[in-house]
Image 1: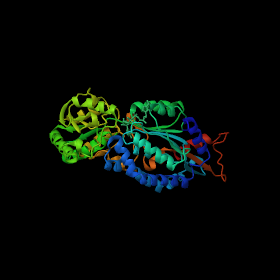
Image 2: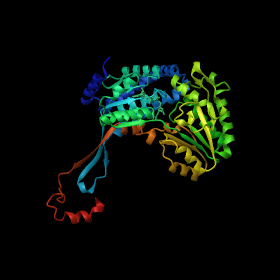
Image 3: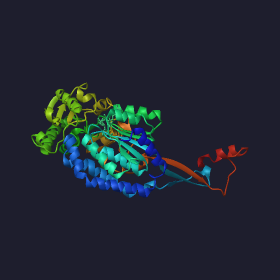
Image 4: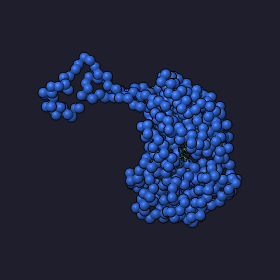
Length: 458
Ligand code: NAD
């Protein structure tokens, strides 16, 4: 196997040769990738099932089909996005033509997590290739079957000097991070995000950090409670709650709390049956470490539903916990599993006390029919993105950048935003030669009077 430094040299030479730049070859590469994914869609779903019993529909909807939709969108539009964009000229440069020209950064490192192991590896990779970069992908060691199929697909579609998968754990990741890259795209925990950022700083490498957070979900007394409960249950328990965007905890107005809890219970049973463990539509916890962490959350607060577990199956049932203490395991950090704490509030100011306890979240959800309330929530709190009257779905609109803010990371991607993220924007002024206004050249004489007179035009 090629060593990491040798792989980097090969990719460097390939990038320097200009081979990644022609748009036709970028599009052809992405079309080959699409074909390989379509051909192996069942095998990808099998790999996801083998990693954490991910239900097939969820694998199709949140992994393969999301990636294929992203591929189609990028293949169809990349040529347009990549065109230099004329901008209005500045009068001080008159006469000139001014434009922004996109160029690939060069060598990109993508490090991905285990929770959506196919989609979160492929999605940034596609953007980086579309923008004309080489890529090394380091998928998670905690979803080994999916990492293996990622490697199979990438090595079939790409020459390693263009795109390569390097499998391995923390040490491999650290060896990769010790190299000099032109861009690093990391998805994972805030803790590791800080390590990545520090390594990148040593080489002044730009980074995108897609991190986690504690996502609040607010249910106002005016909300359609039954529908809200249905959408919350879906967004919370898809992927068994192992979703960076999942609602982490609920803040519900006291007046509708009991109605909401009853509706949540109803929809959990409706979706997964009385015996959730027997349902084919509910995933397992991906690793032993995560399982133990989540199991420890079940003992604090009033159990309003679930609380069941099975060590041999890494199964934690959908669980509703009312009022766990703020220093409980569940409220210390991101839950990232099928445990849903519920708190009630009477005054709007109570909401702030909860949300401000944590850093800026990746997502915020609010269910309400009151415009003024919605406006106050959206302007009062900073968060990566979110939804009104639903959960999680904003990730599916490829016209919007997906990403965090503050503690939940920085940099947004998907569709055009991915292309732009992985491109350096060069600003070019092409000065005409038929006129050369004298004012900027010494001796300045009249220049001071002129600059004051025409300052509003500059
Ligand atoms: P993680 O940070 O433990 O691992 C992510 C990647 O970093 C893996 O490939 C891993 O091998 C590598 N890594 C782990 N420790 C490292 C170290 N010390 N040095 C260098 N590399 C290291 O994250 P995870 O457990 O795989 O994923 C869960 C986290 O990811 C959650 O916090 C979740 O919110 C977040 N997440 C965020 C998004 C998003 O888009 N914002 C999406 C999915 C997951």
